Length: 33
Image 1 (cartoon, helix red, strand yellow):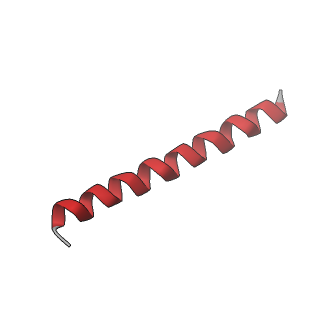
Image 2: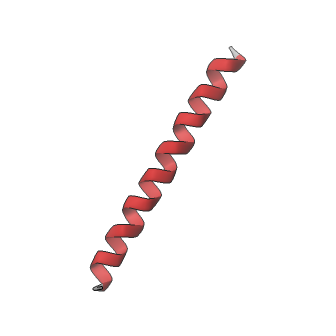
């Protein structure tokens, strides 16, 4: 696996994790309100 592919996979992983966190935060805020 080339380094660029590895970096790309990390980018995808992080964007996925951030998306999940945003979604959970959004749901949490909706519950609070």
